[in-house]
Length: 628
Image (cartoon, rainbow, N blue to C red; front, side):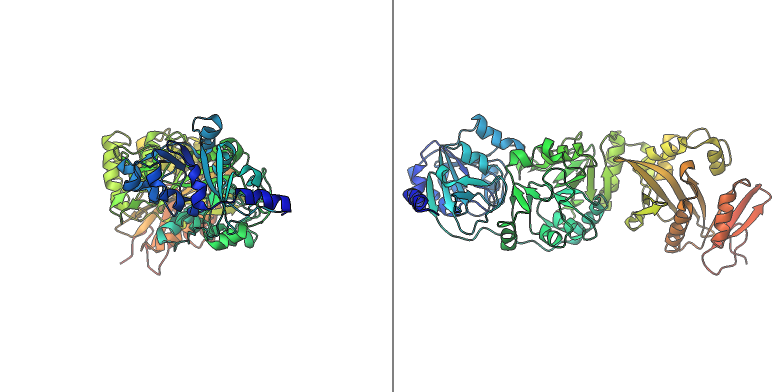
């Protein structure tokens, strides 16, 4: 720095105790965010408690000192939380602090518009460079707006604060009081990823295409997702926040950001929280750009990234799709944050997928997070009209554009098995789902391992077992067939597939009654293009099969794939053979079953061809029963 600049800075350099003398009774004060909260300034501010009254402190989630919310300081300070952290949660719920629910993207507007007038901003910055510019470092978020609008800016200049690229720089001339104090930033080490988070992440992995742009937070589920993306290609990041989990994928060239439309080649965020490794990684790294929350969290900006995959969490979700993410009943827990910003931005992104991810239970498995009704007093952060994907360790439910019946069935199917019967009974009583569904309950675990994406003649198609919520898709599949296909499947000119029959056909026990379907996708809409199913004859332990492939997808190996997959699965369920019939004019299944080594013969009584596929070395008669 030049001599002149040093002189200017020295003229404003004071101790922390001296700096906070600018805070007067009745003023509004903004405190820097997260792991960059100015700890030294806060220590001194709390010491001033006997000298001031009715000072209102605003901030997002912070870590470290928050003793200003203690009961003994109630007349001196009152905190107003835009997002509630652990260090102020008790004070908020005890009435000693306030909570302002607001979208993260809109908080800076409060300052710029004057709706919240800031008298003082207490922030932390990096030391100035040779040109006099300090960086607000790892937390740009709402801090940048506070610096630009506060009457007095007090900065703790900390050499431990990284110099982060993007819209993070503030010239030293805009800082009124400078406190030079070095101390380590608060660190948030990653926790060991638990089995439930890994199971959720496996489902999410299937929703993430190559070249996607990710929005992730911190915690076990985001870290688990990142750990499973090692075979992806050219991923990008546009997120309000991130943690250490992204570093490995960046270093390995999996996160390249090269396919992003907006800020290509750059990780875009407004803040990060993690360990010193993360802080050192972003320090003076041109691959990162941090921008304020009104930009990063703007749904219009978010939507410019194609294939934007947004992953957010929830505390509860009811059977209509309402998401509670900020309270436990009437007790406030966190805040709206950026969830709705990114859900709406991702929904407008071409190929985007807004995801709500949550464990199916809480309190050691004693409470279901998927509920008939949200707890009394619980807040709705994401409305039922905004929700798209919901993921638990038991699967994925797609709700957008679905009826209440479809939503309830889909959510019950990904709830914990211990609570499904209760949820079904409640949903039936509320008339959300058909009465018939009560007796059509699953008795086996949903076979997630059969869900896969397969390539058939150059086209990637989703393969998975049917769920009860697929009843409407099954009806659409039936009505898409020409009369010849329907006759070939049912042996009579069936004219309709009533909803109750579709429900029965799609509600399975995955042992005695099993169906595997192949789905095509049009945007986020799945439609069935092929189904293979079996029904076990418990006396003979041989299962009757049926296979139907949409007319436009035949002779692509789909039927063979379904058959072989179901055969391998049936063997694990102690089924000893498959049998089935087909019309005399249908040569394709005759050729297929002969090729697979099954016995094919003509049944004169029924005037159809039948096949018999023995899984074990058993002597079976033509009807699939064991010979004496």
